Amino acid sequence: MRLDRQVNVDYLTRVEGEGGVEARLSDGRVLRLRLRIFEPPRLFEAFLVGRSFEELPDMTARICGICPVAYQMSSIHAVEDAFGIRVEGPLRELRRLIYCGEWIESHLLHVYLLALPDFMGYPDIFAMAAKHGEMVRKGLAMKRLGNRLVALLGGREIHPVSPQVGGFSRVPREDELKGLLDPLRRAKEDAMEAATWLGKLDLPDLERDIEFVALSHPTEYPMNEGRVVSTKGLDVAVGDLEGRLESRQVGHSTALRYKLKDRGPYFVGPLARVNLSLGRLSPDARLAAMESGVRFPSSNPFASIVARMVEVVHALDEALDIIARYEGPPISRLPVAPRAGMGCAATEAPRGVLYHRYRFDERGRVLEARIITPTAQNQEQIESDLRAYLPELATLPEEEIALRCAALIRSYDPCISCATH
Image (cartoon, rainbow, N blue to C red; front, side, top):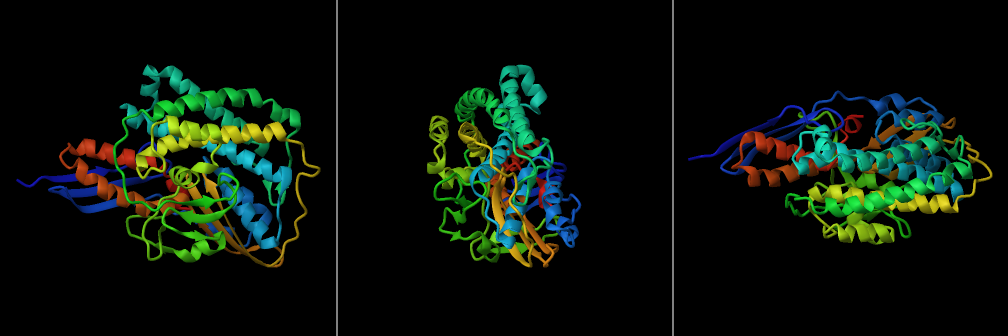
């Protein structure tokens, strides 16, 4: 007797943006699979054309309310690449510090509000909090600290206004930053504890042959700078990345999707970073990874929840180090002289590699813009993972298959609105 299954997730919940899944199985074979992204395109690249370089940090931040700093940093670095500006010293450190704040708040939002209910058997954080109130309280307290760090450096938590080409419109005083040291130390203790118990979750076993892609830096855990590398030998400068990618549009997605030319789908995000730069993590973040029980490098997408908490430990460590050594810079922003030319940059958004490229006229006005987001890059890999996972679920009721497929997608922490920029 043939066993047929029709799986439909009309609207993915606990993700940012609008998407769904359609799948059809027969006797354990996947006959049809679609990761549907139906959120209307937002056309950011088109309406950036004609705007001044000075407007880019504020405008691109609007692509995402969860990770606006990532869009600001990628756009700022791309402008600086075009204009021949190099930011060093305390200003560079402050850029890493605000990025730490965003990683903390974004990762903890995902872990506690979006992904953890899947693994603990709850429909949402409210039901989970009723039974595990102290755990949720600690998680949200850590998230608030990340928001506080972003607000201090950026002027506000959502769509910060201080990051600028050449530096910041305002830099914090030493006493403002030093006041965060004790809260950061307490948060680190909670994050170390959380990484340990997250590793004890009953994660589905979905080890796959995946090409992980992330930035790599010779002396730092990747954040704002580096080369683009992979677990299968890719190693290129950021300026060469676009030429190594193949984009396509499919009828069931309003977002472009990407593959590596002649290679196939690939995976960007925290799990890719931990896999590729495990030795660049802070000592306590490496300890957290080891004590979690997850064996890194890991090729199980569900292990991303542990990788995120390991990165929270690292971000807290790096924030503590930067603040302890901080001395205010003599100026908050380097002089900027626009010129005609092309510039590109990639930074590590919470969800993975975020690439920006701009072409400017002599006044610094945008002639062309290209933005490649993490979720756009992960679409092909998500479908590949679903195709491998679905046969294992074929004998379950259709409703249970749908729930497990949604949990796999949520492990990527997709930002669908970003993908349809």
